[in-house]
Image (cartoon, rainbow over all chains, first blue to last red; front, side, top):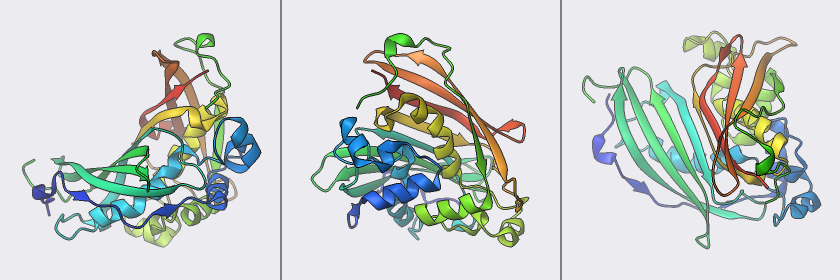
Length: 152
Length: 142
């Protein structure tokens, strides 16, 4: 089934805030095998000029994932989640995600296209603090294999 | 932010210290738990093979995180990363053995920009082939 082009540009408003904790950052850093002290040691992070331990760059995906799921599971969009693979991921940082942040995510369907019979969806997650300070923008390209229609 | 590498000290073509990352099943389980991505293609061989994969594969985001370490190890302060993006071009297949999958990560300064910025191009090779496409980070140096 082809994606519903009417959803191009659709904006999914922010849900509840994601509270970024020190131990979650440490757990994530250990899971990716990264012992950089900026993720683990508060004093070291402060010596670099950060307010608290910072998260690895790709941690932003953990924050955006739940919000993106709202878009991907939007029944009106028509994405076949059983055939989905992650095609591309990109981040642009205003500053690193930092322990103590309360983050909200606004998700926008930025592009919908069909290529080689695959549905290709680009979502943009604008991640900011609850006070409105921009932190990171995350673009995700999701490919649903072999579900696209004949025309783009 | 306080990168430990000075913009003036690097040139286009400067190679970053390379990195070898070994991913075993336990690493996939840890990443699933830490990230909240419990897609069974990353931990259930029976399921992975039922959808046409040779075996369990690593999360693309775990490969991306591992590859990014070549940049953050170099620059010291991960907060110096301004942009980071990759395409996922091939899966990293992780067998159920004591060796797992080995990913070789290299990186090179590809462009110097104003404002102490550089673009670093990252290459991640598994089983003789690249697994990431257009893997690039923009970093603010000292």
